[in-house]
Image (cartoon, rainbow, N blue to C red; front, side, top):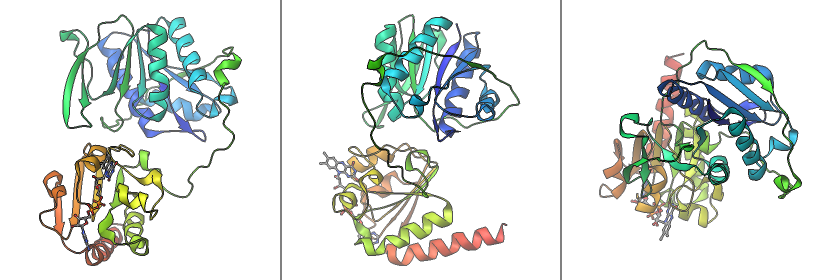
Length: 325
Ligand SMILES: Cc1cc2nc3c(=O)[nH]c(=O)nc-3n(C[C@H](O)[C@H](O)[C@H](O)COP(=O)(O)OP(=O)(O)OC[C@H]3O[C@@H](n4cnc5c(N)ncnc54)[C@H](O)[C@@H]3O)c2cc1C
């Protein structure tokens, strides 16, 4: 009857957002008087998986098959469905991210489960199984009630603060017999961005728009990001004109991020841009036009020329760090 949660890792390191998913599962397990079983797929060390106990998993099921090191949606689905059936689980949790979006709907279809995509709350059991989620690209909230016996919840990353406990998890190794069809799509090459902070996992993001004038000024964005330990992002025209790679573009047609801090420099704040960033906890806008629409969505605003403001801000962050070390 345990709550099942799919854990993600890159190169054997569990992602912070997966600890959050496990902690979320633990709270639901408590509400429903059961335990959490974390599912880890692919090559990873036992010591890394034990840390899942610190966030509320009592058991980890590890399927060490190295074909699972890369996302194979069908194989991941087979693994989760098999484990959910064996554990007689009624609640399966994934993240609302690229992996979750590829896997959770398939799991829900196979288990005839209702699904909540982008959950922002714990279920309210007094009202059935009601969960708050974001709708219309984050512009509104909806409460949805899941009526099916089995339920799949996709948690919106960076919704809850992590708090570590000294809980322990036992690790159980399992083998699952996959079919050839489970690996029907062959990954021929994986080009990972290295040496930078991955945008989707970043808690701090510095982002630039057309107000940066050209790629020759991008060093100003990178300097601030480096000083803060932040990832960099951009508006769509910046990616369209090849100043920056497309994976950095956020918004309706780009990535959706929910960092703790989003600093938008020379970005007007079009609705299509806001759709990808309006879940950020704190938004700082730097723009030379006091009428720029982004200021309406900002917690803090600086009216000024980015070329003058950025070096000063970077220097101030550097000084602050030196003083507080
Ligand atoms: C279907 C559709 C989907 C879209 N999807 C996306 C999306 O996913 N993401 C996205 O970003 N856009 C998207 N767009 C485009 C969006 O509508 C805007 O055109 C775009 O976000 C504008 O980018 P920008 O703010 O960088 O540029 P601009 O709108 O040109 O704004 C530049 C800003 O920089 C400021 N500025 C100028 N000089 C300086 C300076 N020296 N210092 C400081 N500030 C300065 C200006 O005041 C202005 O506010 C989409 C549009 C459509 C129609």
